[in-house]
Image (tube, rainbow, N blue to C red):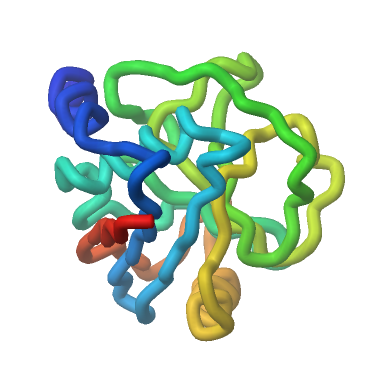
Length: 177
């Protein structure tokens, strides 16, 4: 996938956390995941994911890494866990715990290397706290059930699912406060 820096920067101009609240729906091959954001603790990460979704970045990507009892990970344009949007964002560590359904940003060993890859926790994972940026969570029990169902798919080498679990479309909803 091409570098989407300019498209994301343009989309970010229309995101205003003071005036609006945002939600994101991942329509997946296993059901919908509705996410709420925490812009009060991680505005950069929230804005980044919303902007990526608005430019269609997540459409047709897979959950390339599934670790039962731990996380499901997506957002890699190559499906390998090595790709990104062509830029990185700085960490916004906070005191929100990594609980089931929590949305957090994947990164390399460099804390400021996040881009487009994210993960959703399947269980409580306290050793990730203050090491990865929490910036949202599943909005409802139905969404958490879809996350847990994805977390139960059979995997092979490198925690890759044996059958693709696809994010068919990512849709942002915006409501005035």
